[in-house]
Length: 63
Image 1: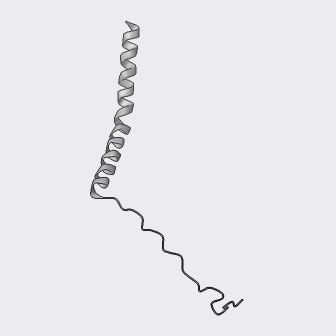
Image 2: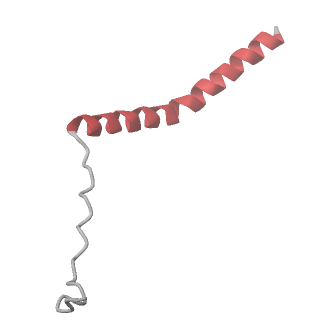
């Protein structure tokens, strides 16, 4: 049996480059800005609303 050793070792092949990372579209960027804005707004307003809610419960309980 004839074996051709002329191609040994096999030639080095570079691995394919990783696929590019997906980028945000303009719509995605607007959505992220809106979500961050709402979260920032709630960060300041939610404690105030919570205190108001507690005051209302205390007022009902005191009669």
